[in-house]
Image 1 (tube, rainbow, N blue to C red):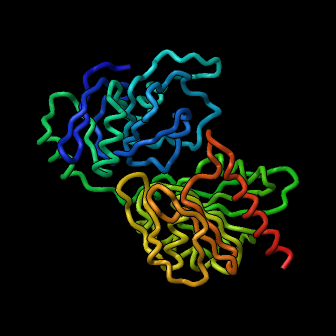
Image 2: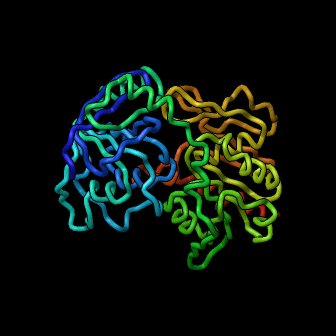
Image 3: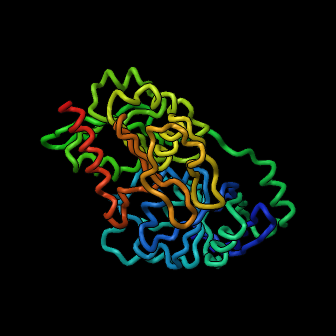
Length: 340
């Protein structure tokens, strides 16, 4: 663990100073926060955080280390990781390395000693923005210039998606599901297996004809990073599959399904991108879930097409299991289609 002074320079010129851990490299990326009290390993291995600096609002991070069995993908996703109090001496008989070692191995800088409550409130009050993680001798003006000179990436999904199909089979399968990998979490695949589905995970740019040739009972469109407008190829695939078999999408998959039906998406003040309810003009689509905090669309359904999607992650790993019923609904749609 390196303990050199590190500086966060936000796009609006605000500066936070802490100490480094993980890699010693500089980074420019989008600044986001996560309020989970556990699960930092699942967060750093969630591809949805690609090209982002994740601020953990829970103060103590690193205390149980990293375990080989708990990764949610084959990559370490964030560009940077920011915490209040990093613990480099884990107490966990299962751990195989520290969080700092994991970040260093993957070239990801970490910063500890930051007042993360203040930083989270700043993001909530002033909106999502980009940040430079750098050494302590860089001025705010120089930092802002480096941020402005760094282009925003638009290829996040292509970088995190699998390069060829892979399989996850289960005993006594009832259904075959093709999962379009825009940055899929492994617990989604585990949940589909648990519900009796053999899963074929395919690259994000797999066309509808190839998917239909696999004769699936349903299609799952995964979570992932970035702007849904950057992956119009997936939107086109969904459009070609609508009405032909049941479809279930979460997170980025939810936004892509909404766009496939002609709705718009937009970047929220902080947190995530959202579906614009005012642009849902297709009478077949119904809003199934609303966010009570910001009144954004959290879920849509199209009963006639057997399509459903939600913005949040019902497979939470770790996390509450109260949204697992959505997998039951997807299975019910596939059962109905089979018996039609």
